[in-house]
Image (cartoon, rainbow, N blue to C red; front, side, top):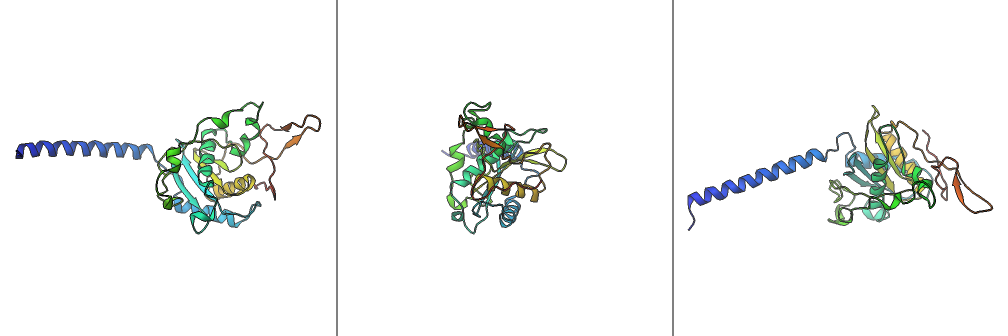
Length: 248
């Protein structure tokens, strides 16, 4: 039979469980901080301004994602009126790019995803890098698609993972030069993706990089062997219809 004593014991157990859950939630919130990184609205505003400024390519709408230094997604946004106005596949690609730029940049060395293209080709020093750190598909594709690109995008709060090795991903550095995460942009040619990411980062005042991580167009083809080489080792292919290089 039910008793007051038994009820008190059960109540105490439930209270203890709720206390544990609250502590766990608080700890997770502490670990998942996005301090200093743009909110969804700030990202969307800066992304839209960059898209409106041009940047070559086909003039398409874009997805943008921001991750913190631990690779946790902090914000996802798009520039069109609805999520269908951008390539749906570019949502996860933008997150990959943000993760890559953050994962392979350092406090004293900024590397854009565009800088990685040549080094990961067959026979080059970083070949295989593109197959490491795979995307967490549960984080990428779970949740209600109606929330994609909103402040409650299902990726927010999760570690997305992924490595992408063409233009559109940049590290984010504060005015004091502290590396606090990465931004990824996708939705057009990879060259325009880089340009839009560059302008978006500048609009967010998170472009205080220790080294120049701009896109480099220095690929040449050996007429005899047909092999493509990069004079710098960090080159990226030019894109049609245009391949703009952002001003620093």
